[in-house]
Image (tube, rainbow, N blue to C red; front, side, top):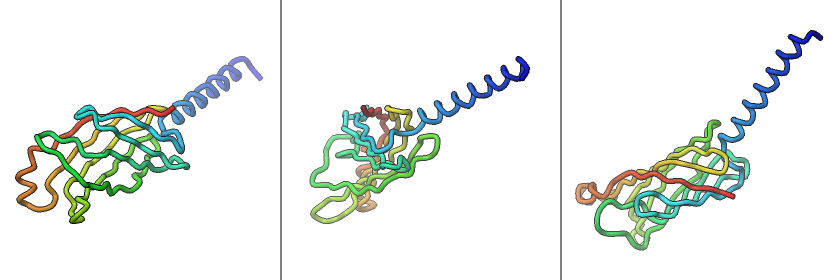
Length: 151
């Protein structure tokens, strides 16, 4: 085998290894729980990656609020969001007022995993119970970023 051919094959092997390393770093850690906070209100955020690494379930105790007030007795309704091959995801959390089972708020969450870190944004939408509530609470809507890490 000539020197030039060996060099080309060596270079090709290095490119393949680097591409594989970048691909592995882009995705989430399978079965891991990432914890962090939102920038607005420092709300804790938890992201639980499935054992196969193909979906994530996001939890935020309450949607970030951009006005005076607060919620109480709400439960989160969420389902796993698919994780794309590049590590990105989009999901939604719906908040329900427990005594009446009325949907009050939605939190749209998107982000991208990069190994042991995930960065993203969360956009809250209040006043889902009625058109009147929506017009009164529209000023409470907003977006924030978040960062979370795993071990």
